[in-house]
Length: 223
Ligand SMILES: C[S@@+](CC[C@H](N)C(=O)[O-])C[C@H]1O[C@@H](n2cnc3c(N)ncnc32)[C@H](O)[C@@H]1O
Image 1 (cartoon, rainbow, N blue to C red):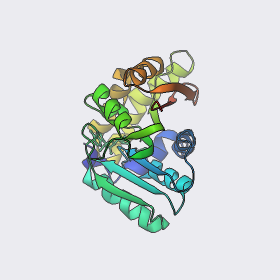
Image 2 (image 1 turned 90 degrees about the horizontal axis):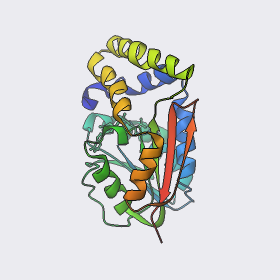
Image 3 (image 1 turned 90 degrees about the vertical axis):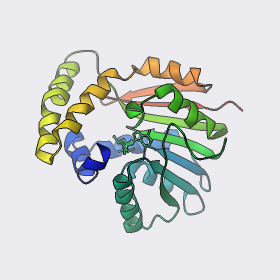
């Protein structure tokens, strides 16, 4: 499915969020608390936008790896990195459930709009925590469901009715009908925080943005 939508992915993000997705990625990248020269991994990187935010924070002396299991997504990410002159970021194929990196390899690990898609969330979280150095931070940016009206009503109208139509116009109604379903079955912000704790992370916190549509979680690997 992600291979199929790679070509329209960036345009659909902008259409679905009125361009706000860039700001949400900036906020998530800030939560990684990276410094110049650090190393970071962006898992489920898609077309690379969150990895680019990390690359700006680690600077030319740092290193960012973006990984994904969709080659078409990775091709878009590589092209964009070349256009932006971001030589400190590389994009490579990897399955989030079996990351090909050693324990403690990165100062920070991020996942943007990807955790929801993992076939086994608990296993994915364990992998993300494993590749963090002690003290390093995991940041998860995800869509979440607002519970209270009026936003819950607007949200339901937008995601259940309008997004699938936008997806059909963009050429893939199945993929954009999957999106609201995947949000509904994803744990609530509190449950996700509990799952992160169960993966051995500490100092867990989360912020809910955009009236309850977006959640940014962070946690640290114990020292
Ligand atoms: C909704 S996109 C998010 C892309 C990007 N992180 C962003 O912020 O826009 C989800 C991405 O997760 C990838 N993905 C899903 N499951 C994966 C897995 N097990 N391993 C690697 N990538 C995965 C998909 O290929 C897709 O590119």
